[in-house]
Length: 633
Ligand SMILES: Cc1cc2nc3c(=O)[nH]c(=O)nc-3n(C[C@H](O)[C@H](O)[C@H](O)COP(=O)(O)OP(=O)(O)OC[C@H]3O[C@@H](n4cnc5c(N)ncnc54)[C@H](O)[C@@H]3O)c2cc1C
Ligand SMILES: *[C@@H]1O[C@H](CO)[C@@H](O)[C@H](O)[C@H]1NC(C)=O
Ligand SMILES: *[C@@H]1O[C@H](CO)[C@@H](O)[C@H](O)[C@H]1NC(C)=O
Ligand SMILES: *[C@@H]1O[C@H](CO)[C@@H](O)[C@H](O)[C@H]1NC(C)=O
Ligand SMILES: *[C@@H]1O[C@H](CO)[C@@H](O)[C@H](O)[C@H]1NC(C)=O
Ligand SMILES: *[C@@H]1O[C@H](CO)[C@@H](O)[C@H](O)[C@H]1NC(C)=O
Ligand SMILES: *[C@@H]1O[C@H](CO)[C@@H](O)[C@H](O)[C@H]1NC(C)=O
Ligand SMILES: *[C@@H]1O[C@H](CO)[C@@H](O)[C@H](O)[C@H]1NC(C)=O
Ligand SMILES: *[C@@H]1O[C@H](CO)[C@@H](O)[C@H](O)[C@H]1NC(C)=O
Image (cartoon, rainbow, N blue to C red):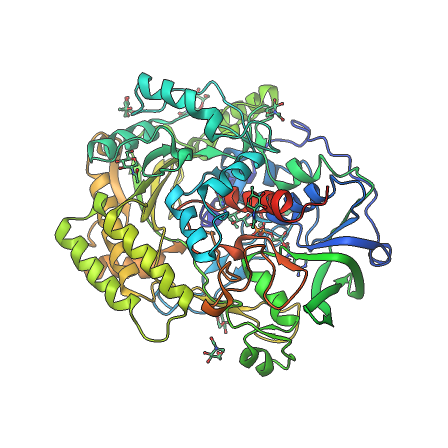
């Protein structure tokens, strides 16, 4: 979810649970030294021990005869409350350079000229260690679009479902019933679970353990506005209000993520070598008649340069920003860009760093009637917070073991009239037929056009936060609803800004660069305002604090959107799985075009953005690569 909690952190950190209250079993071996790592004869080297890289490398190491190395820039943070404790502390690693690369975009001309923050986890486990715990999947139609773009039927809903399940251990909690689900529907879902969920994977997914009145009231209000509760959002249709699952192990009340779930259970394997605190700077190839073969990785640790060797494959899992950065540093990308940075092009692959797609959210905030309980009570009432801390220490329950989980995935038809829909579609048609689009972009737009017109795939997500974000006053409680674009038309890019491997690339998401996106976000904000004025949610509200209720005209609301909207932390697509001729970077086996053995396994391969939070899909990609493509046992 969003990275906008920064201003609240100090007061919340004061009530963080003491370490030792929970304990994650992790038999960490002696860390290899950089020089012993460089001297090891690896079969596989994975660059980036993040979400995908940790999952894939741990799976590869299950074959005892495969020697697997991982190079991760961050370190392992074990039993650290900043990462582990969900109760609205879980996102406190965001913006803190101990855990976050904390990238900054180039000025976003259509978003008030701001340089927007782009969080990326810098730790073993990567972004899965600092994310908002939302655990969900896109709709079947969206994954089927992946197969269409990839030209490979395995990258479809039915091809990915077994791997979405393989990563997951859905562990039901005795939670309250969620509003809007009838007993009959609940029974149907119960019967379906074995076909939809995974029950033996490493990541523990669970339902939230408590729902404030804000949650029940907003759900019923949405139901009243014609948006049904979706009892089974995991089953291939995501439309409707849902109680999203969380990557949260309720037995200890802690985050479940790539480091604790995949690394710790494999850490003691003698063939698994994880080097932390080391940043890869270049991949080196030898030329063969079949293409370039990746053989070595240069990395820097403590200011010293080393080179590690792999005999079979090198896997790039550095994430949506740094995967294209390393490709470019290594001579793979748009030759014009590489030459301008004094890098000798080895493979001219202009899709590298392009097709950058990201969700973009506007937020509305309301102050609530006195006495309406939200997470704000942890900030407002020190006695209550101390009680919660004691409860968490005693049995891992209460507010510190919970977070927000109400989301709603909406079609355009859910929020605008038929006339307005036609108007939006004609704006779309104009922008989607601009000259100079890549084949990939044309194909993406054709799919999006169908989804918007048919309303079979959500275009918008709403997320309820039972806490305040903006100008929060001591003693008051708030609700925030974020409303964002799931399938923007805008496409951004990320490219190296210099040949210095330690410098940040130039990241330009081009937020709101297309009018369709801006117009839809305006409709979303109007829908949020209407929500705040509709019962029973309105019964809880004293005043809408943001946008300022005096902002009424489209121009005033647009000014608010440009000044305050933010990315959703779901960056994807910069090394797309698509045919080379249309602008793709990797083929159906996720190999980089022109290479014999360099694979990309992370969120950068998404062929088109999904209307879902990205982590579960990223784990599924890693699982699929291990079990379908890189069969080592
Ligand atoms: C603040 C935030 C909130 C989010 N909220 C949610 C949510 O609630 N639900 C959800 O599903 N998704 C969420 N996401 C998105 C999701 O977490 C990511 O899409 C996913 O984790 C990305 O996985 P990845 O493997 O592609 O990259 P990452 O997990 O980011 O891994 C990349 C790894 O590579 C390392 N690395 C990079 N460059 C180098 C180098 N040169 N040398 C060595 N190592 C390197 C990094 O340190 C990192 O560990 C959120 C993300 C963020 C940042
Ligand atoms: C960042 O994290 C470090 C390590 O946990 C902590 O000491 C520090 O207080 C954090 N900084 C902020 C601003 O929260
Ligand atoms: C904003 O981005 C521009 C271009 O990337 C950069 O020159 C400028 O320093 C950035 N500003 C801040 C405050 O980061
Ligand atoms: C497609 O998936 C099947 C079953 O998961 C697998 O056996 C096969 O190797 C895959 N084919 C390709 C081309 O990836
Ligand atoms: C799934 O997670 C629960 C909760 O942590 C745990 O009790 C159970 O053993 C796990 N199941 C598997 C197969 O790992
Ligand atoms: C809405 O909130 C009120 C006040 O907190 C509560 O009494 C009521 O039960 C809630 N309504 C629903 C439908 O949950
Ligand atoms: C390569 O980059 C240059 C410079 O940014 C750009 O003009 C050109 O269009 C790009 N080539 C392709 C095929 O995208
Ligand atoms: C603060 O919390 C305590 C303990 O739960 C409670 O007794 C007290 O009434 C609360 N104070 C206020 C002002 O709500
Ligand atoms: C998804 O479910 C909703 C009801 O929750 C229904 O209205 C809609 O038609 C379904 N969409 C698809 C594509 O099946």
